[in-house]
Amino acid sequence: MPDRSIVDQLFSSANRALAVLQGTAQTSRRYPCDTEASVATDAALSPAERAESAALMRVNHVGEVCAQALYEAQAIGTRDPQLREKFLAAAAEELDHLAWTQRRINELGGRTSLLNPLWHVGSFAIGFFAARLGDRVSLGFMAETERQVEAHLQGHLERLPEGDEASRRVVEAMKQDEAKHAENADQLGGVELPWPARAAMRLAARVMTRTAHHI
Image (cartoon, rainbow, N blue to C red; front, side, top):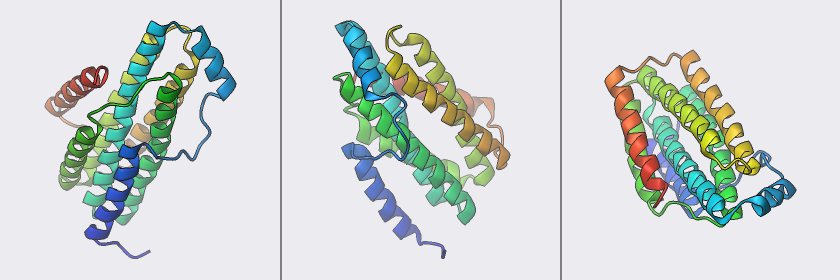
């Protein structure tokens, strides 16, 4: 397949971004929790527990909005067609996570973040900047991002209300994919980022998660 111009890539990326922000993304894999289990779970949750679960899933949904933007930008920023396909394949799996978290938020009667357009634009800029630093740095950024997300999801597994088995199944499925993405990025030659970069990423993630929990 011939290499596509950056203008074509940006146009395709903009169309996908619109679907992400409109909440029309479609999953290619089965939802981790069936409808009967979700209904049974939600019936047993108190209003406060439902609100907390919805807030945590909103944070996870924001993470998936950011992942779409990051991988789209990294795919556009690389000059390696094969690596571009790797980034787009990871984005496709993250699109499943986006759809899953959207569905779970709807089941809980919650809402997505009002700041999703801002999260998307900021993440796209960061992803493109990482890509322009070189493929090995870009892959290192991907690996570090996924490791931090995996740790974040583990924290959510511990914070979710004890009776919310439906959300826990969704988060666990996401966590397994994030670990695989980090491992793949390492195997493709990603370099370990210096500790100031890793610390800055953790700080930015903390600001995002705390804001998205409420807004």
